[in-house]
Length: 539
Image (cartoon, rainbow, N blue to C red):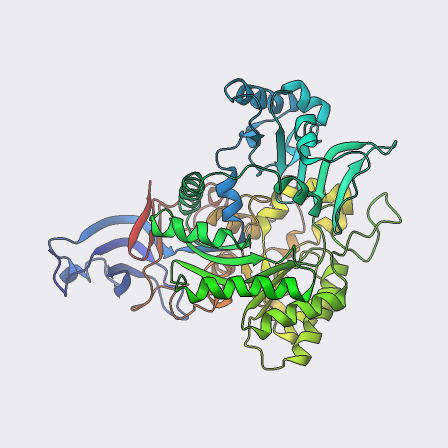
């Protein structure tokens, strides 16, 4: 049995990068009771803390870093899709449809078939989405939902019948029901039009939801991610996350942003906040699962982000704004008045300009808001004047190179090569004093601690190297996932760096990410991920 003076876990390594300012690498780290107990510059410097029950890890060639945050991802969505048809593995439409056909062969007729969501059509040889007719060729006995990311769907005929979507159906505000040149539905739904499917899609059982979150969170942890800031949690799914946490199914910490996308009126915003307050009042917030705030969106994504200059080949199309600015000001103001924080999706430069106008008005009305209350999610196409405004207002920005990595070709089709290469100007943001933190936007981009570091430092994408002048150093990229991520969530005293008294969230890597060959970063995985002193992943 461990004595008070002995550690639960002792790691001896080639380097322990604490990320504390000015502190040189250490060689040993001890953990007791979920907290970091001590550090030493000598590998044997903490041996006195090794008791009979201490787990001692001798890793003379390995490197310890804090566990990484993914400051903008969608864990709940990952849990939903983890058992979907794995179309992300397909490389052409024939293979894509074969996977659906094989799933249909072992699925009872009439039951919905859904796909994984972490793929882009540009990864297929045909570089397009499947059509309703092609999905019908795979099965007419099952409703089929092909979901790509959060805001794009394609349905087969059986699914369209169940949703009630006809050629005459009008899309909800902020949504698109795609039609062909003759006005007929194509089966593709974009942005808020996807809600027409969500309302009829059968709900999985709580046990199935927990199982999905268990698998999805373990997969995040296996890449070195220890905390996920989930930026689109339906308010009713807070209870699902709590149930998963109670069963020990969450391998990562979760910071939840409740979706405000369906709120339009002051009464709807208040009702959402009432439900959030009830959840918090029940005492469900803790270090593992915490309600962070509310998520809104000012514009669309790759194919609908609001821009100042028109889309490539579409001289009259400038993307879509999803809110009237005055209405968003009112909604954000109601949220912050209740002591909650707000993150708002802004992808194009016009979207970011309008969002900064909104934030500026809120801050004029409430000049004493705590720093970090208002956050820009993405800020993809941030011009110099917009960066200066965000910095002057003290607005943090979450950035996601994996999103650019996977979506580069799709974005080039919409915006052209120059604007796509200008996305995420990280070098400029940091040089100018911007407050950045990093994530993936999974399932639009792939998650992974070192995959993200590799991308931010090389600017490599599926379309080649884009905007190399915007690249940052490895140390800066790691800080965006650790020190700066904890600053974003307001947890700098607890997480983000390794120091005595901090939460024991750390990762052990087989090579030093700061010095290993750059090409080795992309696929580098930790041999161990520790959260709160507990090993949640071991290779």
